Amino acid sequence: MKSLLYILSLVLLVSFASCEDYLDTPAKSTIDESVLFSTPDLAKGAVDGIKFAFTETNSHRARFVPYYGFNTDIEFHYKSTEGEFNDDAALVAYSATPQNGRMNSSNNAWAMIYQGIERANICIKGLRSYGNVENNEELARLLGEALTLRAIYYGDLLKAWGDVVPRFEPITSETIYMPKVSRDSVYKQLIRDLDEAAELVPWPNATSATTTVETVNKAFVKAYRARLCMVAAGYSQYPDGIRRSTDPDLTVEKMYPIALQECKDVIAQEGFSVELEDEFETVFRKNCEDNINAGGESLWEIPWANNRGRYVSSFGVKHTSSDQYTGTGRGGSAGPNPHLFYDYDVKDKRRDVSIVPYKWAKAVDGFATQELSTIETLYFGKLRYEWMIRQTSSSDDGINKNYMRYAEVILMAAELENELNGASAAAPYLKKLRRRAFDQADWSEKVDAYVDGLSTKADMFDAIVDEHAFEFCGEMVRKQALIRWNLLKSKIDEAKQKMYNLRERIGEYADVPEKLYYNIADDGETLEIYGLNRGETEDKSSEYEFNSTWVDVEELPDERIESMYYYNPDEKQFWPIWQVFIDASNGTLTNDYDY
Image (tube, rainbow, N blue to C red; front, side):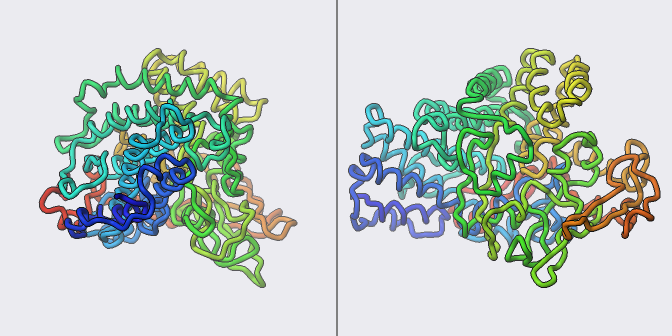
């Protein structure tokens, strides 16, 4: 009999490094599958176990989340400047090799994601066989959650590696060695699975099981299915070049209407199951405060315990040492490209939440003040130790990774309507998102006039691409979007040119101030700054204690700009399969793209 002990042991085999014979070795039985998957409490434990792979050090916790998603036209990993052959730099600057020292181990992200997939496969098979899901709503919900978690793991595999090994049944000795297949067939399976899952899981807060964003719900399933439909129909690098899929089931004409309907289904639940937060900052304060209540903007989060997950410690505002807000000096591994600060409208409230021009200085007697950074090294502001309720002294901060939020559904709807029905159909969705970004007094100019001026499909698409940057800076969703738009390299090159123009203060950045003036505010820790905004060029030395050159060639050197990538991003859209897995695959796995 298979047992829970067997289930938890079996998943470790997906690194292809274990003996085949183990798969046929009888396991000591502890809980019969027929009992495990027909008993809601026991089945819930098994499905929750699918999420465990997210928490592994070499999986999402400290490898996938910290490295996937960089570099883009708006986001830059500061390891990039350490050189083309540095293991960390290579992962984000498009020069990774199969031997990458950060990733090339048998328990790394590729293996850990497949561990999660194997756990999901076992649960899905068990629930279908023994769960009586047609008559038991809770077991049906658990099946829907297992299907969705498997789709999340696969979605991350596909965006990082392109073509992958398809495993939709538990491993046997006959299937331990399998070749990769075209991503098209995997996307089609995931889209079918999520369609089924959406029928099985409730809306947020519809039952006690979906009262938190750590549990899969119908809004997330539909939103994620819309995203995957758009990715599957979009551009990506295949072995024969960058193109859309040639599969007739994955055309824009077939995928986009499905995606649009999913978005509309979610939007119809606004005020009941989902909500756009009134203030942009509130989204991220809630995240940092461990507010996991469902029904708001967050649709689903990777649920890390307090002692797991390196989200703030990787991407939060940098703290140089332990201080009044944190027991560890962490944060600031990556940040925005500096031109983006000046691409925001000065009245856009998202700017000062998303981009921070300071770090926290070394504490004196446990107390730190904000310290001006440089234009070369800005920080993401959406994650802040100072917003946390808990104080952590570990490299793991336990703040959940917000995997998808309702704002993305609204922007996807705008893009889909524009493609299918034109700019006027997209306009209400774009207006909806921009109203939150500006004070109501500015809506006439910044929302209505701006959006109404986008009269063509091309103009609207360009505006949506820009809006995506302003809305999602620092959330690591941009890279996949640029790839599916076929804009990855061209947008990074555009960003590089913008940075050259910015440091020379020419062209679109001619009115950017060269010098900043600043004080420490009366609270003893906060910076007050003059000169950050365009046109703030007056001499304020009599009013501020400190001043500093902000923009010039020395502050934004060639090295910083040119280290955005080392190889052509359009020829290295995906990571290679790591050598340890190639070597252990019995000849079934190979790399493409000249790896």
